[in-house]
Image (cartoon, rainbow, N blue to C red; front, side):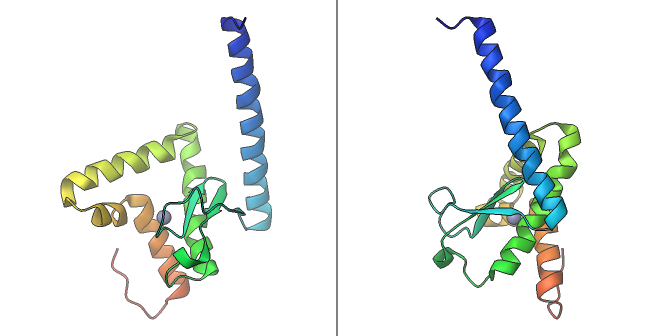
Length: 142
Ligand SMILES: [Zn+2]
């Protein structure tokens, strides 16, 4: 039988393991400059090239990348990893909370899922860096 103390102990063990994996992932990212990229097309929604669960990048099948190259995708996702790192001072999952709240507020403002997504503060910043880095001739107004 599992009593309260036992379940608390296992919560601590799981939290410790997750913290260690996340810490090692960030260590690898900050030392190498490249995120650990996991090919996980079953986890990433269709027509989405990649998704960051910081410090890891989940990559969709190449057929879902659109016009983007792997370098462009990783440039975008690296910005999200650094954004997530910056938010850690506010708490572990605060990046996703702010991201989700921003999306919901944008849905109310724009009444369009695409516009709501592209106007999330974190996405505007990530696309800005992505375009500045890979399409320097293109005029970007963010
Ligand atoms: Zn993004």
